[in-house]
Length: 167
Image (cartoon, rainbow, N blue to C red; front, top):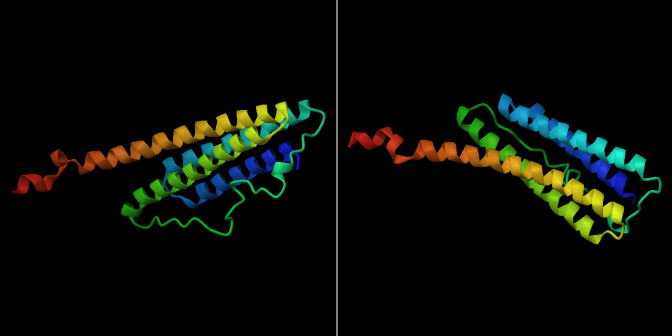
């Protein structure tokens, strides 16, 4: 399979994954982040197309044969979001961010493995660049999850607990 075709399909599937999630959430901040991730996947697609147009010979890699990309796996599993309760809204955000983080970590691992396994210098360079782009997504999502967790820690701190003064 041609590495460009594989990478292009993965970016398309990633964009669709994030747009589908964005359509299902009600929280505007979460929707903005998911739409931003989808736009990044679209930008990656354009970068790959540019690289493909500058290299005239297709680069085939037998390790890609029958390998599903991380966004095409488990398509039958839908991500259920419950947004009826305010309490669930916080969990929804955490759940969606964790699901996105897992996909991005899988993308990094996949591109790293493809880079290491490839025998083509051009392919190694492309996979390395894509891996670095996905690492940026991992960092952004980890930071968001950390901020959400800090909010929970702050609210649960004893000094802010009104029950503490009741004794």
